[in-house]
Length: 167
Image (cartoon, rainbow, N blue to C red; front, side):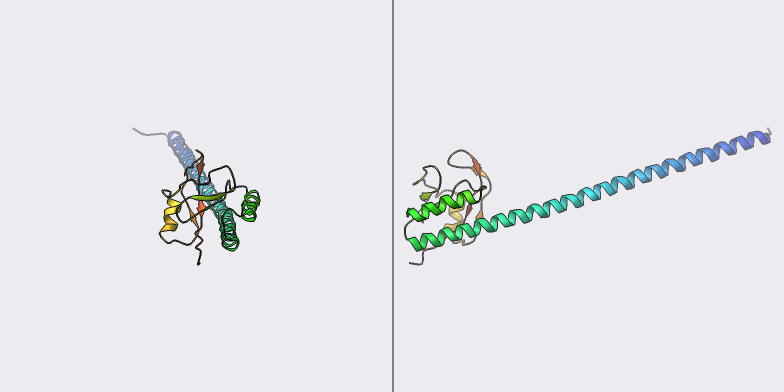
């Protein structure tokens, strides 16, 4: 069986056409994959930048909270008693200064709230709370608790710092 020249040319053109289509499809698939990879990389880079920015903001806020707690502790030691009117005023002013803080309180060495900036939880026992136990064990630095249900029923995180009275 012989094939005519026309049939051979037609098959050749058809094969070349099919090969061109396959090459075009492979090129398109490669471009789509490259675009996808670029988009994923750009998204990851953006998420990394946002995470670094959030980390810096959290770090700044925690530094402010730590300084605030140190100031309150120094005032507490200087003024002598946790219910001193000037110290209570300091607690209220500082609470409005940093809106993420709902309340500021002074807890004595027995684990009872001695002074508080907000509603009347004075005298509440917090000895079972992690933030008290950490400082009771000797930790001096800033402690940030995991979120939990607070005494008033709201979900909160507690930032604490132990202030030891050298007297």
